[in-house]
Image (cartoon, rainbow, N blue to C red; front, side, top):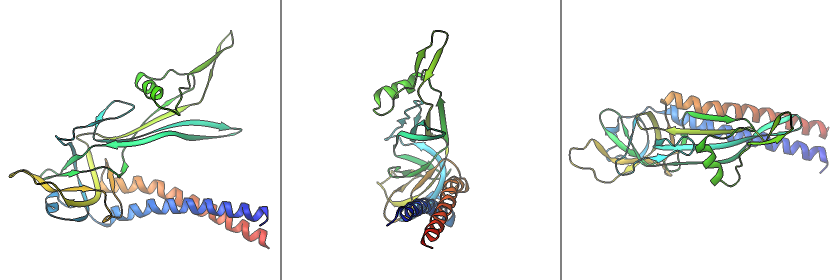
Length: 258
């Protein structure tokens, strides 16, 4: 195989990868919009995929979890640390660390309540980002996080040039996404039988979470349509870029074959 053909195949593979990723996102949008949320009372004894909306409330037994960057007590969070890396005229944000955590919480639709287990969820929460220029001292909580996290170094170095100090390092971005108690919440997941509830309680005998019986498991801090739009934005640009790159790769292969 000659070099031009190999280059064409690589371009085609990259386009295909982007298309597949965008397609997964758009598949999630399809399932989110396909059905309407149901009243929580209908989940009592029900098993299967379900959509619910309401207010996120802390479970008395599970409590809350502390987010890493702001120290907020919340029900679930994701975080990401990125660093702006430059090579010649090109720059890109490189992910240094990321993760998510959460605790069981309750969704209250005003009449009834149901527990949600967030493990394995595709979470779509509002972003809260802090961008730190090079040479800047980090806020206390971010400094503590950097100190205990391998692979993430503070970019606060300076060089003394006698007449001035030159900042060295890279720009960093710390992004936190949270589901706070009292926020609106949308959940698409698998409903299954939960632990027995007390007589007279408005907590239904069910738990919504991940499982093989549902095509997607999504938790968002906005409405059904707002969730679909958040997912679609990422899926559309990936699919469009993937189609463009794959098309270019295919045309390149055809041109070198003639």
